[in-house]
Length: 376
Image (cartoon, rainbow, N blue to C red; front, side, top):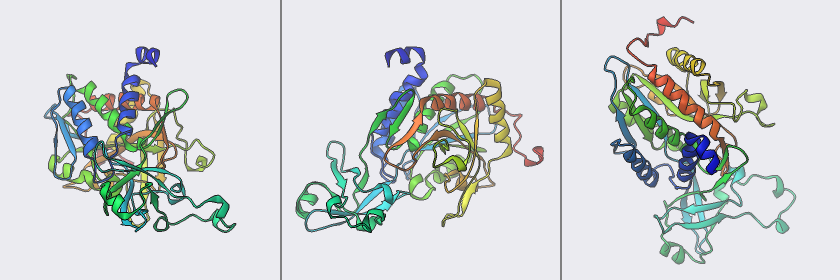
């Protein structure tokens, strides 16, 4: 690791900060610990930040007044569970918060987030195999049938430990360093992008040429995709760039979904849509597609392309505020999303950092956001 750090300090910083952020619990609506850590990191860069009432963390880098203003944002929160009922014997029933895959829940280690130094570990029970019927072996248990075992033997003991109805629960925070540049673990979505944003801020803070860039570390993305809206309404940016994962499709179960490869470089979404109740998505503004294509070509950064149904980001709502905001989703490939062990590649994070710096410093007063300047 020392040799790698000496050879590529950007990757070394991304590795250290991404891993640190992955280990901090921050369920959607309970992002305070993550926010305070990021605010401290921004302070070391000499950047002041503040929070709005929802909990979004905002820092602004003033820039050229004749250039379109930019909101660059990534979400701090993670998905998980909420304590719903405490049984008399101390077992805890849960509600799902966010797109938690039910089939991946039994046997998972979890953490009840009571407060720093007071969190309580638990496990999601899995019926003993010796007592499982043939029919049960192939059934995915709906989450209302699951329960969490903390080892505490009564409701009174559970309450005394600080666990009550409404207590937030996350996958037990974990980082696994895989071969090469790959990191696995909890909340790669979207702590990796938060780390990238901090590195972008490091690069931009002393740049002689840049637009005004508002850095927004947002809340509530996994809950209802609207946490960034309050920040966008106040900042009123001309451009909004959401940083998030892009579905990697280089495993046997994903090959029909696209051509995004882990380690193949950053990616941009050309189309996203979510039809299961949400009925929203993002088709990026053509000016931003061109901006990042040109930046990637100039800097010789491989730029992958994605179009998918079933996932979307805050940009789908941010694009609709005021008179409309030019939006695009740019991100890093990730495998096994929304599971307790997601995977990213540090080379992609470094490439994403370089791409964003190149793209952002290319925004000036000559960038038109008039769609008629980009004929189809």
